Amino acid sequence: MQPDEFDRDARTVVLDRLRTALDDRPKPAPVRRTYRRERPAGLDVAGRFAERVADYEATVLHVDDARDLLRGTNELLRAAGVTRLVVPPGRRLDWLTRVGAELVVDSPALTQEEIGEIDAVATGCALAIAETGTIVLDTGPDQGRRVLTLLPDYHLCVVRVDQIVGTVPEAVARLDPRRPQTWISGPSATSDIELERVEGVHGPRTLHVVVIG
Image 1: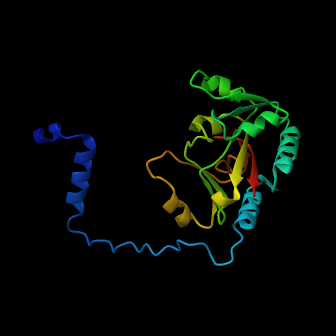
Image 2 (image 1 turned 30 degrees about the vertical axis):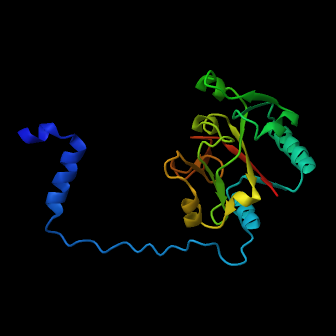
Image 3 (image 1 turned 120 degrees about the horizontal axis):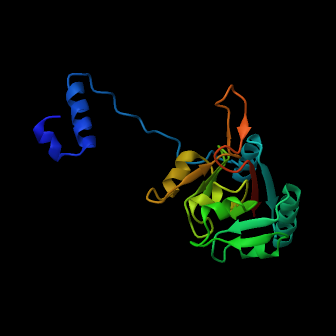
């Protein structure tokens, strides 16, 4: 490293050297950003979203009223053997106090080890994407901190119909890029080792989605 480079950080030095090395190369053509930013006409976003989520081997429950919401959620939790459920603090998921599982409200005092010992987590979402079956969380009031959806083995995510957008560009346009985002497409899974699907490697192995409305 030259003496005058000691006053600059390593990232700046490396990038400057790359620019110098590429100065005599042809400049790349501008990237065309003519993405489709609006949903296709007539798209049933809730129906398409449910189809795509099911493709990922996740379960979707679509409910229209509070009675069906409670009954359906109880059935999902019971079928999954969930007895304890961690939830973000606040009032948006208050109705979960009426389901048949012990609720643990998250707080700074709750350690990662304690979160990992809880059966399941329940959250809302920032939005969902119909074409890809993706749920996006951005640590909003009904979502909590990111670690909540990484450690428990089961994730129950509540999605309102008015939160479902058609396409990824439509979702990006609505999201705040300054907020930390987690994009979830089905249960955690990988096929990196000998193309064998393994679930639960870096997050919940079971995803249940409740669509309201």
